[in-house]
Length: 387
Image 1: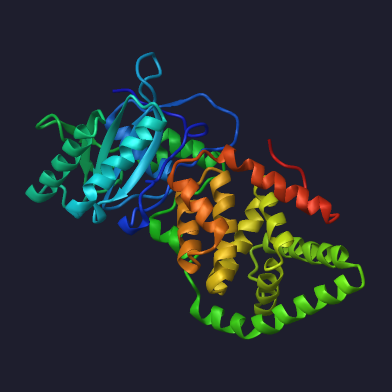
Image 2 (image 1 turned 120 degrees about the vertical axis):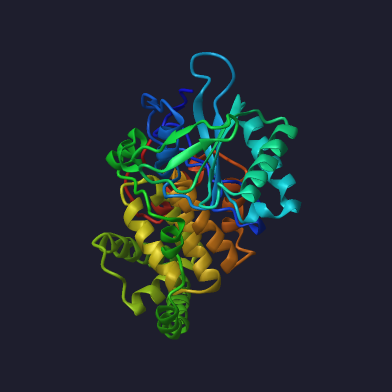
């Protein structure tokens, strides 16, 4: 087996599933950069070692499904997408149909030639885990999904032994995940590989004490902003008021790039300002600009510091930015947080639905272009857009 993973061109997908299944993420990251030569993975041990880089974190108690590109031709074994499912969620027999439908729909959408499956389970050598793995693989076959290879491994660490689920007695040793070609490519590309999914969720986990402090300032901040905008509108200067507000937000983003946390009053003022729809919409334009990373840092701070619709607003901006830069796992975490905070938030629901259905990021670039135009209409240049 010589599957090829293209870390800069092809997606790493993280299971589009109804969120009740507690799937780790939502879908693939489709990097926006130009295609690069594919990276070769010459054996299952190397494939398993490359999974943390493809997912963006080290999976635990997971079923990882690699969707193979097309059928026939020399590129038939290139990996089109990588999907992670939570093994604990898959323990419910009633959810097997959802699992197989999910994988089947991805294979159909990507015109896949089959899949490879890797079970990451510290108890994988027992009878029950083996039976569960067999039933899941059989269910995929019943759905019409060709499983071209399947392995189990207790953990993805250098030297861990994996076993082949189709060939009794066959197996091997996992290579060093940090030294895989996919990992090296991602490091050179500036992408992080986190030690666990918990590191992703921690970035948007509510900070109870910070939230309480910001909440005391939020009401007055909202009142000040609305009163100021109303007064400006009566004087015919609403656009000038919003322009100054947008410039203030951009200054906050630039300052956040240093890594310094925002003060409570700044976070409250930021939440109040983002309640103004033109300002909020303009922020989506940053996802394709040079300040995307700094903006994500600020959105993450604001998501930790606010509840309800304000948290959803920040998390949706964060998820959109991660989505467009190809980080499907983090986008899924951020957008799930947004919908959990406000299930009626239109943009959060739209983005999470798009992510779960496997919509490619380039289909959402128009939203970033619209944000850029809204900023221009307010008289603010938020910088060039990446192609």
